[in-house]
Amino acid sequence: MSIESSIKIKSTKLFLAGNIKFLRNRKNRSQEELAAELGMSRVKLNSYENGIRSNLPPEDLIKVAEYFSISVDALLKHDLSKMSALKLKELQAGNDVYVSGAQLRVLATTVDKHNRENIEVVSLKAKAGYQLGFFDPEYIETLPRFQMPVLTTEYRKYRMFQIDGDSMLPIPDKSYVLAEYVENWYEIKDELAYVILTKNDGIVFKLAFNEIKAKQRLMLRSLNPIYQDYSVKIGEVQEIWKFVSYISTQLPEGGLTRERIAHILQEVQSVVVQLKNN
Image (cartoon, rainbow, N blue to C red; front, side, top):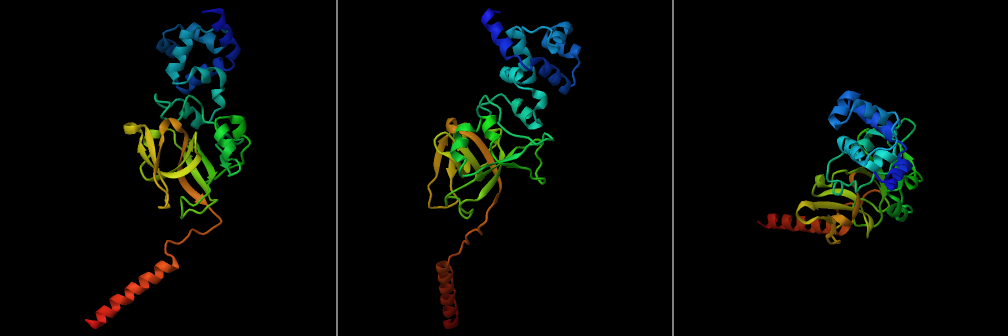
């Protein structure tokens, strides 16, 4: 190993020893069992777990990372024992990290003192900042957050977004939409509503049609029929959240206007007259 690579590993190896031991115990493996599966001696593995050997050869580092389905960056820089079950699940999910939504990063999130996932709130004022800082834990820490006891957050992540405009009527303007984080974008269901963070348009709330496999894109539709459908390339998407519910201080607009009701009454009256004549 070159001097340059050795220095780099030394400078970033903050949690490696503890992470190897934590992941081994989480997988219910003894040192002997894990060493055999990694193709190294138990003495060597023990020296890594206890920080006795500080200079890991890149090939051993890659072996450990691949075995536990954890990126080298996360293995080195993050204390995995302090992460929630949701974060670990995201780190270890699948091979297609780009389309699964991970995009080679960990979802920035916050937890309460009991290590339970918070629900952060992205208001209209925070939308521009969120587009730039959605991946930054320090920025996410600045968002208001709360707990909702009726939601199970051990393996699910929720966030609340304030929407604006009339494109999703009858959901009123300025409503707060509660949504669940979508880890695997292939699982997006047609005609369900999603909050989608895109590079160009920021946060949008639309019905989605999944065309990822065929055309590497999503088709988006508004509930309000005056708005036209449009597509967004999957490479432009940064986060996707599935609609769960919404909170509003306004009553939804009724589907029947006064004019429509009057027209229906006129039609009914015409039918009644015809029946009488017959």
